[in-house]
Length: 106
Image (cartoon, rainbow, N blue to C red; front, side):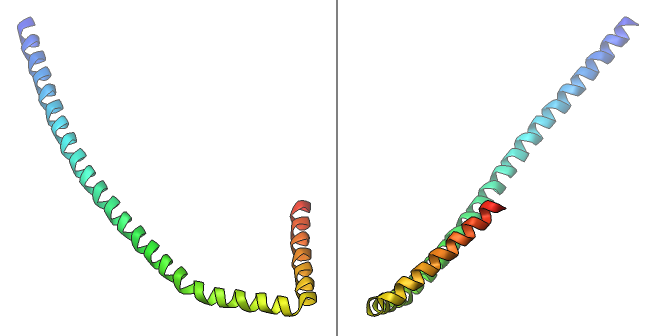
């Protein structure tokens, strides 16, 4: 009877070892698949970010000349009308101060 339990125990251990080897093989396969998918996802994200960066840089480059023209007009107007420029500056400073005071009270 002890021989029966010993052979049954050996079979169970052998069966468990086989299952463990199969699980290890499956885990190795799953790691490879996950690595491939992760790599592909990273490449897709990199391409997407590169496209977004290109789009933003083109838009900024297109927006710079009109902004420069507007800045030159404002500068010319401020030189021609220094009192009005000072008044506008004081109004802007007052608005900023009001916003800061409002936040500090909240």
